[in-house]
Amino acid sequence: MARMTVVEAERSAPQEDKLYLRRICPGLGRVLLAAILTLGLTATPAAAVTRPLQDCTPEAGVVKLPGEEPWAQKRLDIKTAWRLSTGAGVRVAVIDSGLDIQHPQLRRFSDFVDFTGTGYIDCVGHGTAVTGIIAGRVYPGVTFHGVAPQATVIELKQSNQAEGHVANLAAAIDKAVQLEADVINISIKAADNPVLKAAVQNALARDIVIVAAAGNITDKNQDVPAYPGSYAGVLAVGSATPDGRRADSSNTATPVGVLGPGVGIIAPWPRSTYKLDLEGSSFGAAYVSGTAALVRARFPRLSQEQVRRRIIATADGSVGKGTGAGVVNPVQAVSAVLPFEPADRPVVAGPPPAPLSSDAIGKVPPEDVVARNISLSVAAGALILLAVAGAVALVLPLGRNRGWRPGRPT
Image (cartoon, rainbow, N blue to C red; front, side):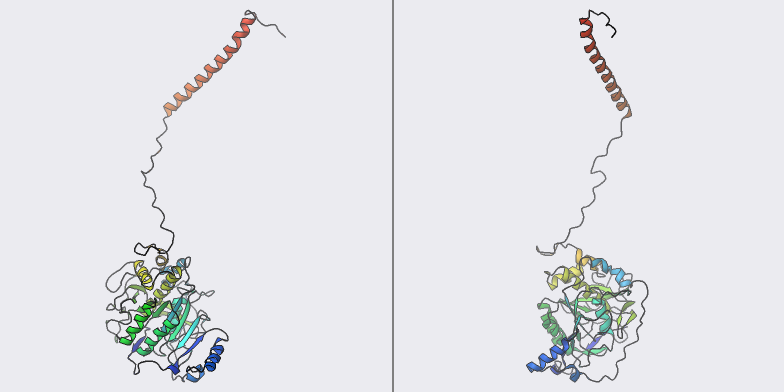
């Protein structure tokens, strides 16, 4: 089961000399480096801060995917939601373990901020999978795709291992605010921490939607509240099975808002491969973050709170403890008209009018054959009488003029 956790850091904040930023596109890294050196800033070039890695061996993935579409994509009917929104123009910050920037479905679309000094790699695989679910591009011949393939991703690498430090997590949230993210995905479970809470509150105050994993129940992780998912204003996401139930591994102590697909998940993986059987609320959160990107692109005037309420209100419905409002429904999230939204709520087509009832219009009475025949007979008789009268009116004057003598042959 793939998961990410953070522990208390020994320091209050990450060292500034281990932070660098790169936009993945040709030449821009060199431009940024030149600007930094020119301005005399404290940031250090990537080559100077990257530490040699003792072990960077993520689990092996596969190159070939099954021929049919992954169940999560079919269940959420994502392509139908694309008729209204693909996430274009929305910036999604992913705080995780890094990203395989060479993956065919994850190239040339991400800002990358590293808080670990280990470079543009993902030694865990978790960040690559989560990012792919949120915004993986459509690729010819590949059945997998992300929820919001036109969204812009800001990748914030807070750890190079399965566990990280809460100071890095809080700093990554602050950096996402600075980089003007619209949505922040945090597929990480941490303990309550004042620094983390302050970072979350600041992001919410800046109108950023925060989606966080509810956490997983394992031998090492008991069913206790996960943070930042348990903070007020954060949309906590549990893990759902293909039939819409809560997965047995999904935490019930965290106040779950909705569920997202989290069992048997297919997603991109390091070294340009894929994983076929991922499990955990991390991936459910990714599906919900993608949905949040669709909503923000479709309804840009909605606040982060309104986006969160819309996603909850349009979900499939609760199925018990730890399921919140049920499985997220991207199609409804981008199309429903909600009565509780303000006067300037989204302008979308209303639902079609209800069909008229069977008795709304009177039925045509059956034809009276007898009356029809009588009417036709009367009409025919009247026509005959009219013809006879016409003939008499013509003949009588002629007969009088001749004294009723027969006419001469011509």
